[in-house]
Image (tube, rainbow, N blue to C red; front, side, top):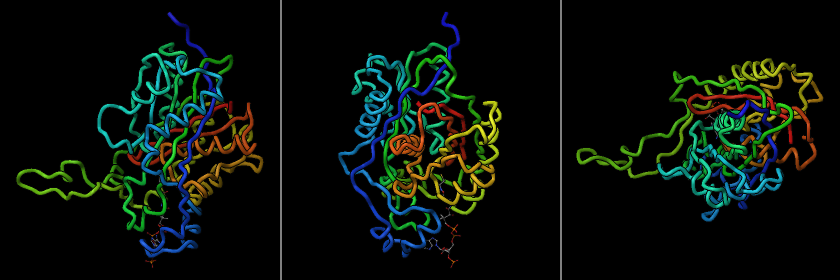
Length: 331
Ligand SMILES: CC(C)(COP(=O)(O)OP(=O)(O)OC[C@H]1O[C@@H](n2cnc3c(N)ncnc32)[C@H](O)[C@@H]1OP(=O)(O)O)[C@@H](O)C(=O)NCCC(=O)NCCS
């Protein structure tokens, strides 16, 4: 019987697709402007994956980066958790192919579908799996190719969604480096962000012809904006409370990179002190859903804004509506 042990994030990695798409390249299709997009969302550019930058390829690259940072080999990983909504094959889980590519010893591997909240769900699950002794090291990957699911003529989403992958390694630690998760869902608002139609509607039935078009993501931007700005600050505060901390004890705030105005509204509502560094990766990266928090953290570490031992607050939220938050120690 393994005793309950402490867990921490041991390494962080990222993969950013090579193709940079500035606002100027997308405005014509949605009758918009660089100025409008920047003012409403804070986004200046995003990255869209090329055909060879698959979910699997980007995940493996981010994971290898995280393994190197952690000083852990692929064959030590006992569990691979992949948070994504844009792996277009319903089954099997892409995590199994990624676990194989990384040279794990047939690690447990599965995907989770919690949209933009998926990465924080994965951190909570990975930490509990290692704590319980079900694996010594767990890999949590957030990865999306949302450009595959975006209608480039939809004014409400075409400028927001983007592609990329981020990963972390979770392992045993002397002190607890991953705080209790505060998570939940509000299925009453199931329709606010969703795939427009299901696969049966696309393919059709003998009686009813299908649409034959990709089932793009649709979003009711205004209610999502209000929900995220006003409700999520309370969830973030609860995660701090459960970790026994106040905003004064915090060094870094890494919210889901949904929209710069939501990030600012949350920081105001939480009364974050000046010294707390805030992730603003969305300006260059767009909204990469499950990948956004590890991508943002990776950048903060690379730019010296997040240092080893810093206390960071994660909060993620999106379709479902699903949400999760926890305090972690930066590796
Ligand atoms: C998407 C979002 C930026 C739209 O901003 P908004 O202020 O709610 O926009 P609205 O839909 O109310 O439209 C306001 C005006 O902008 C116009 N507009 C909408 N989309 C536009 C676009 N892409 N470019 C230019 N103008 C646009 C509308 O026509 C409307 O014009 P009007 O006032 O003359 O009628 C905003 O709702 C938002 O950020 N929501 C949250 C999205 C998000 O973060 N999702 C991720 C969660 S995981």
